[in-house]
Length: 230
View 1 (cartoon, rainbow, N blue to C red):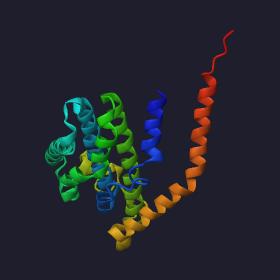
View 2 (cartoon, rainbow, N blue to C red):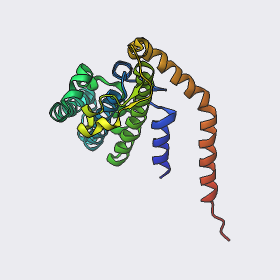
View 3 (cartoon, rainbow, N blue to C red):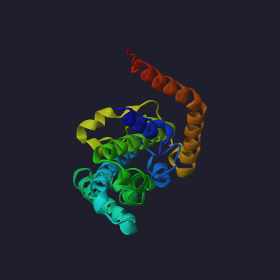
C-alpha cells in the first residue's frame, strides 16, 4: 500500500511529467488552446501510457536488453494507431482538431520514459498504476493549461465539447464573458509558454508546504502501525 501511495505521489506531484520532468511539451503547448482539446489529448495519452506500461511489464522477461527500446517503440506505435483509429471513427471532429499531435503520441517522452524507467522493472499491476498516476498528472496539467488559455482567449470553457463527448455535451459550454475578438496571445504558443511558466512557478512556490505535509502524513502512518510486545 505504501508503494502505491509513493507511485501516486511521484506521478501527481513530486515528478509530475508536465510540471517537473517537462516531458511531452510539444503537444502540451500546441494542443492546449481549448479545454476540450486538452481533455481529448490527455485521455488518449492516458490510454496509451497505461496499456504500454502493462504490455512492457508483462513481456519484460522475454524482451532482450539489446533491442528493448525498438520493441517498446513498436508496442507504443501499435497502441497509438489503435487509439487514432478509434478517435477517427467515434470523434471525427476531435480527430481533425488534434491533427498531427494525435499520432505524435508515439514520440511522447513520458510514455517511452515510463516504459524504460518503471514498467520494465516492475509487475503488471504496479506498472498499470504508475501509468495511471503519471498520465493523470499529465492530464491535470493539460486541462489546467487548456482551461486558463481558453478562458483568457475566448471567455469560454468546454467550447466544442460535443466533438469529444457527443451532441449532449453542447450543454457543458460555459460562456463567462463575451469577447469581441479572441485574445490571440493566450491562444497561440507564446501564450502557452507564459501560462506554463506561471504554473511551474506556482508549483515551486507551494512545493515545500505540500512536501512537508506529505512527509508528516507518512510519519503519522508509521507511528500508527508501531507495536509494543511484552
